[in-house]
Amino acid sequence: MPVSAKPAKTQTAGPARGSLLGVEKLPARDITALLELARRMDPLKTRPALRGKRVLLLFYEPSTRTRTSFEIAAQALGAATSLVLSSGSSVEKGESLLDTAYTLRAVGVDAIVVRHPNSGAPHLMANYLDIPVINAGDGMHEHPTQALLDAYTILRHKKKLSGLQVTIVGDVYHSRVARSAIHLFSKLGARVTLCGPPELLPEIAATLVEGLRITRSSEEAVRGADVIMVLRLQRERLAGLKISLPDYISRYQITLARLRLAAPEALLMHPGPINRGLELTWEAADCEQSVIVEEVSNGVPVRMAVLARALGKGP
Ligand code: CP
Image (cartoon, rainbow, N blue to C red; front, side):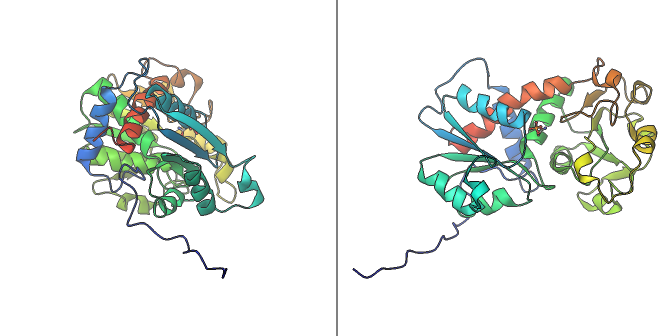
């Protein structure tokens, strides 16, 4: 028998329906529909909506919140879950991203949730797979489900995002959380202000969306804000940047005194993990206005909605 070549891996017509790769290209009506679906999800009540479905969690980077909440969300909908970490898998033997994706497809998974250190990795997978791919954070690019759960958290307290003043403080440059949040909050009508030193917030960030405001003064950024989102200072990525931690703390750390400049009943948010005593004081992290723990809890209904949509049971 002659040996014939099999066709090489071929690109699909585009990401499978239900994929969630980012917020930038997600229409506002889809965001609203997902948030509405999340509102109807009850993580404490197991539903059979995704019974028989298999959700694969593929993590090339550490995670506590995103990974566990996706797992709990999938199981609350009746789906089976499997976890593949790059460490301990055949990725360590050099298997490529696409070969890994094809292998997981071949064992019969119905959707892949992926976190990867390289921007665009979920998009590449989605362009070669016929099943939904969900971005759980790609490099310095996007973290769409974090932005959705943050919007969901704000809406539980403020009822609408339109007209709210949202301030994002800290390491915007390295933050996929910030990029997704900027797009999502702006699409829903919030006025977004960014604050940080030039090394962590280059002027070009102002071009991300129309109407974005940049300031170098944390007092100015926080004054009158309805929501203050503090970003983790990504110390693992600071090598080569001229950042003095004592200077950063004195100019940008969110303290109770700085929080008092915000609007009454302003919300304090942080995607986690927190560097207590660095970007945020201990007292501020645990103050009454802090919704940091609630953000984590809200990750479950939001990710239930994302999975329901991915597997054909949502908008
Ligand atoms: N916010 C967030 O993505 O946290 P994890 O890295 O713990 O998932």
